[in-house]
Amino acid sequence: MSTTAPGRLFSIDRATCTAVDDADPLGRFRDRFTLPEGVIYLDGNSLGALPRDTPAHMQRVITEEWGTGLIRSWNDAGWFDKPRVIGDRIAPLIGAAPGEVVLGDSTSASVFQAAVAAVRLRPGRRVVVSERGNFPTDLYVLESVQTLLGGEEPLGRRLIADDGPTLDDVLDDDVAVVVLTHVDYRTGRMYDMADVTRRVHAAGALMVWDLCHSVGAVPVDLNGAGADFAVGCTYKYLNGGPGSPSFIWVAERHQSSARPALTGWHGHASPFDFEVDYAPAAGIGRFRVGTPQLLSMSALETSLQIWSEVDMAQVREKSLRLTELFISLVDTRLARWGVEVVTPRESSKRGSQVSLRLADGYAIMQALIERGVIGDFRAPDLVRFGFTPLYVSHTDVWDAVAVLEDILETGVWRDARFSRRGAVT
Ligand SMILES: Cc1ncc(COP(=O)(O)O)c(C=O)c1O
Ligand SMILES: Nc1c(O)cccc1C(=O)C[C@H](N)C(=O)O
Image 1 (cartoon, rainbow, N blue to C red):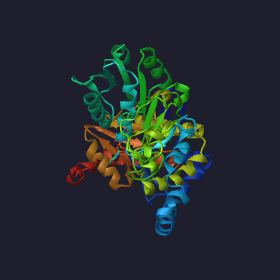
Image 2 (cartoon, rainbow, N blue to C red):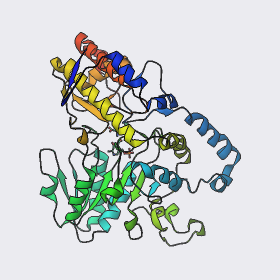
Image 3 (spheres, helix red, strand yellow):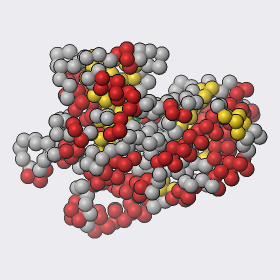
């Protein structure tokens, strides 16, 4: 079959996809992950796949470091410093310097830490800005920030949206902080980080980026963009496993003046002096809170080993090829069912996922999952497919679209069993 991609013409069939896979410089990484037989996994943008070495590593941490080392492992196995040591290993993936990243709690808690610190660095300014379509936890957390820091009246909130108001509409000298997600969880649209940060700074405000759908998905350069704070999770593209800790990045220039919201003892200047009064640790260490989730964190040691061997430019190149292939196959094979691609076709505006608008998207996704093609659904009508270049191939993309075409053609998704909803979609 031949397919026409927007902007350029190429002929492709399944054999061509396989030939491209055979020459893929990232192809060798697929074996570093454990994926069930018969599954095409297109949901690594929600929960990344399991690295093959993780179970043995975690087993060793549990039996040796915990079982045998016991309390001694805080020193002997370097447990106490892990949040910073692992933070330094994430740093190259986001354009951060050593000593600028620390592992945290959940992304929600890290958003709170970053937003509070940012607002406090802009005293007198009484507005926070975010986006209507932002991942809800960011908006919910900001509501608390507004109440807690507002004094007698909560801080004001202005939300930008695709259909307006725009960022430039809402920026003025009352805005303290802008909190945006770099790659949109629903549509996969990606902001120009440097441009947005520059406009926010021109208004005198500070910029907090949520990198949940960016880290390990697209090259990120926080220092190059001059951003102020960033947070992200490690269980999606970084493959840290369910509940692996979030990270927080604070630009070096803010670290000595930033005051964290949660002043726990692991962020104290000398935690084992057990002083009565809080004194912040120097640098990024002050953004630690309490006892780190050591076991979850240890899973990141194996996945970040993989990431240290990966060239992000190659990841981006393959990610764009995979998403472009998917979009062009959807255009040529699925248009007759009115399937709409909502992800930007312009590559500079696209992360590593593609979302399709489908009126019966929930049932269609369940039918896909039953056939081994795992993506997910976001209400009211989006089906999402994440393309993780370390373990998704061009042949997977071809096969996934073929299964989707068959499901639409046969109408099998209309079966009642596909409309029963679980707690998590
Ligand atoms: C943009 C974004 N922020 C935050 C989160 C989640 O935050 P948490 O790790 O606290 O569940 C997600 C996904 O779950 C997300 O997509
Ligand atoms: N974090 C998740 C969770 O705790 C349960 C189920 C899914 C998730 C996700 O990561 C959802 C994801 N952030 C999204 O983009 O929708």
